[in-house]
Length: 63
Image 1 (cartoon, helix red, strand yellow):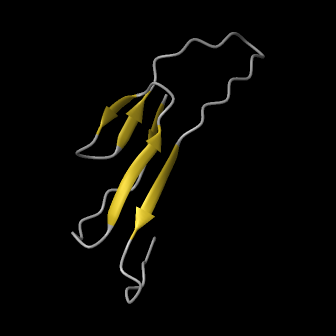
Image 2 (cartoon, rainbow, N blue to C red; image 1 turned 30 degrees about the vertical axis):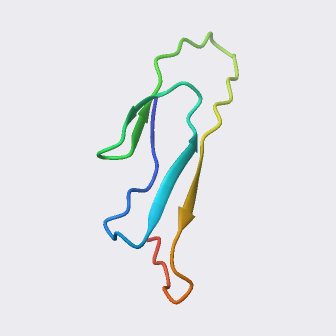
C-alpha cells in the first residue's frame, strides 16, 4: 500500500512527518510504502500524521 504526504518546495514552509506506522519512507518525494497482508473481509487501520509550519504572514495554497 502507498500513501503520500506533502513536500515543501519553499524553504520558509516546513513539513515534518510525525507518524508513519512503520512504513518505508521516501523523503525526496514524500511517499510512504507498506508491505502488508490482509485476509478477505479483514479491516486494517494505518495511522499517519504530519505537521506544517509556516510564517504567520504567509498564506498556504494546498491544492
